[in-house]
Length: 161
Image 1 (tube, rainbow, N blue to C red):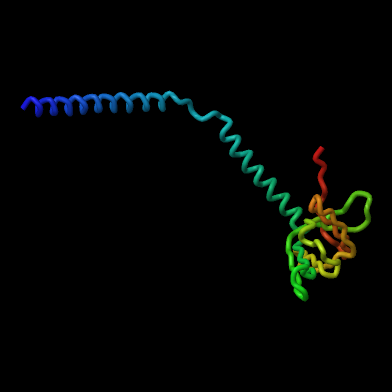
Image 2: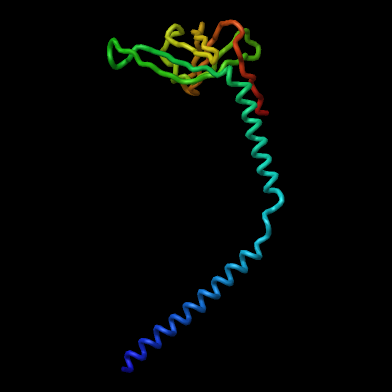
């Protein structure tokens, strides 16, 4: 009987302490939440900046998109005789300072090993062009393709300085 009474006293004490602890914890957390200040006034300004940043991004895309080209190339396979390897990527048409004409800048790995007649550039207006000359730098993975055509759109080059 003493054992049973001890058990009930133990369970009752634990329940009482658990309830008191839970009550204290809830009150403490609610007071801490109530003491939190309102969001700083700069938060709505940040949201406005994000929208204006998005609008600026859309403006840049509209201006540059016509100068973006899809590039496809083919070259003979080095592993399988009689087979060709096809690559695809993208590039952008630009005017280079001090140079006449329009050039496409792309990745070297897209056109590596291909001759100019094995490279096609598809413009957003559905024209398909071939480069007249190709320069590559495998180390930096950059390729520059000389392009000739009428009224080619170009993207302006910026200066990071």
